[in-house]
Image 1: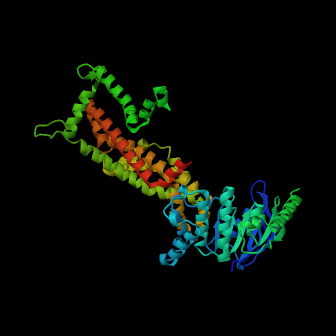
Image 2 (image 1 turned 90 degrees about the vertical axis):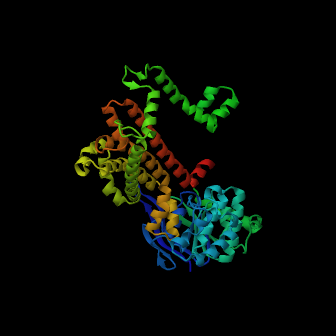
Image 3 (image 1 turned 180 degrees about the horizontal axis):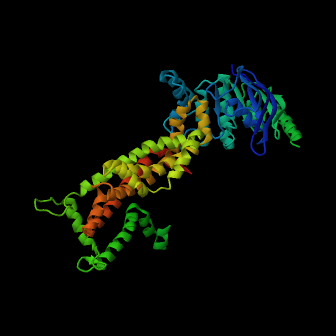
Length: 252
Length: 284
C-alpha cells in the first residue's frame, strides 16, 4: 500500500524550444517509506512529484502507484502544496472536510477524524478562521490536515515548509515527524534544504538539473523516532558533509 | 490625499475630512454649488431664455408629481404617479438584469473553463458586442411590439455583455493550484465549477454585475422613450414633448438616484459575499 514506481520516465515540456524536465528516471518508493527528493530549483523534483500526483501526463515511460498506472489526481495520494493553496473563501473546517464532502462520504464517517486531525496539528481553536487570518505555518497545518483527513496511501509534499521562517519551519518539521511516526504513510518529500531532507527522510535522492536526473541515492540510517535535536548530532553532521560534497561534485 | 492638499497643515481638519461625515459634506459641495449657480442665474423661475426652469420650480413640480392626488378635473399627467413610473422602470431593470445574470454568469464560467466553449461561443459574442443597444430597438419593436418584454429584452442584451465578459475573465484566472488541490481531494468537474471556479470568479463577476446594472438603467430609459408607454423613460420623453422641462429634470434626477441606489445595493451585497477577499486585501 502506497508504493510508487517510475520506470524510464521522461517529461518534456513542448513549445518552440522543448525543455527536458526529467530524463529517463528510474525511481522506487516502498510502502511506508519516507523519501526526500533533494536538489536545486529547476532540477525537476517538483515535476516528478506532479507526475506522481497525476497533475501532468508523462512524456515517456511508466509510472505506477500501488501497481496501477497513474492517470489522474485522487484522494489516495494526498498532496501538500508549497503555499498551502487553501481555498480562501472556505474556513479551516470547510477546507479540511472539502475532500470527504465532494467524495460524498457521510458526515458521521469523517467528522470525528477531521476533529482529531485538527487537534493533532494544533488548530482545534481555529475551525472558523479563514485562511487569510492564519499565519503561513498555520495555513500549512491546514494543508497537511486536509490531506491526512482523506487517509491517503501516500503523502506528496512539494517544498511544504520552503516559504516559512526558520523557527516555524523547525516546529513544522517536528510536527511532521510526530505525525508520520504514528501513521507510517508513504511520503515523497520535495525540498532544497539539506538539513530538512536528512532530518525527515529514510532515503534521500539527490537530483541535478538540465536534464533532470537522480544522480545518487543516500540511505539515512539515523535511528527513529527522530526529533529536531538530531540536527546537531555527530551522525547528522556526517550525513550533511557527505551530501554537500555530493552536491558540489555534481554542481559543475 | 486630496483632503490633505485642501486642508494644508491642520491635522484635526484633515481627520474630520476623512471621517464619514466629512466625506459626506465634501461630496455635497459640487452639487450644492451647481444648484446655487443655477438658481441664481434664473429670473422669474427660468434660465437660458426660458428654456429651463430653476431648481425651486423643479422641486415644486416633483412634489406634485410625487405626492399630490389627481382630482376629477386634473389635466396634467404628472400628478401623484412618480412612484408608479419608478416602479415600472425598476421592475423592467430587475427582470432584464436578472435574465442577463441567469444567462451571462453560467455562460461566462463555461467559456472561461472550457476551451471548446470558448472557441464556439466567444467569437460570436465579440462580434455582436459592438452593436449598441439602440441598434437593437427596431428588431425589439418588430418582434415584441410596444410591450414590456421589448424593454426587458434590450436591458438583458445591454447587461449581458459586461457580465459574461467579466465572468469569463474571472473563470480563466483561477489559481491553478486551487483546481489541483480540489482534484486531489476527489472533486469531479461539476464540483470544480461550482465549488472552486465560481467562488474564485466572484470578484470579477461582481465587477460585471455593477457595469451591467449601470447599462441596464441606460437601456430601460432608451427603450421606454421609444418602445413602451410607461416608466421614467416614457415620462422623460413625453414631458419634453409637452414642454414640461421641470418634469424632465426631476425625472433625470430620479434616474440618477435609483441608478445610484441599485449600485449601492450591489456593492453592499459584494461586501457581504466577498468577506474573505476584503480581509485578504486588508492584510496585504
